[in-house]
Image 1 (cartoon, rainbow, N blue to C red):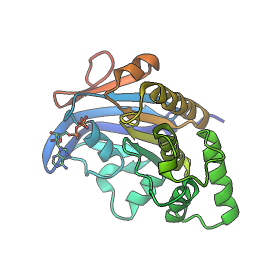
Image 2 (image 1 turned 120 degrees about the horizontal axis):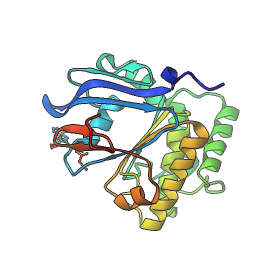
Image 3 (image 1 turned 45 degrees about the vertical axis):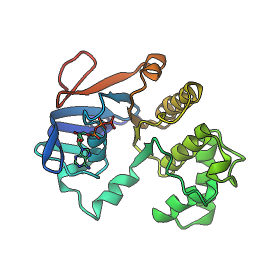
Length: 233
Ligand SMILES: Nc1ncnc2c1ncn2[C@@H]1O[C@H](COP(=O)(O)OP(=O)(O)OP(=O)(O)O)[C@@H](O)[C@H]1O
């Protein structure tokens, strides 16, 4: 049964300030993102994209205003609740951040063990599911250096999917990839958003992928966040 609309809202910011070391990077940010929605976050270097994303995953405390992500109040996050919030999120960066001395399977296992999975059977089945979703079945025993850049990014996406995130946050996920591989990754993320009802918030400088895969766009500009039509969100 579909969730009622208010339960589908995964990011809910009201007049929130985004700060770095007491310096305001973005002010008055009001933003709603719902489950299954695909949203681009754009803006020039230094405009505040990464700071906004970091605030959403609890790596940067917010300033004044209100903000909720996956039901967690950002102003009240603490050492105990941050890991609980992170379990509802998948995070994908430009540099793949894989453990280079471990196989694909062990990179995934590392996250499952860190998030308290215990049952070997269930772990195996979940790893197999996510590798299937990203098209990497058969690569379980490869190490990162034996994979292409696109394949490594797929492992990172598979890793981000392990705990069935409600929101996938991707900071320049195609930054190190050639155009064709970037398109493949975008296609994959678009499909995952649809199939898993996961919201995707993707920060990028890559206007080519936005043209190829149009979706809602929000923009950091002059200390504000604006929507597609140029209105403050
Ligand atoms: N760790 C930090 N400490 C203090 N100030 C920071 C820190 N990280 C970023 N800033 C400042 O916050 C502002 C926004 O930076 P941010 O990294 O969010 O921008 P961005 O839009 O993600 O840029 P890019 O596209 O280059 O990644 C910049 O003025 C930057 O200098």
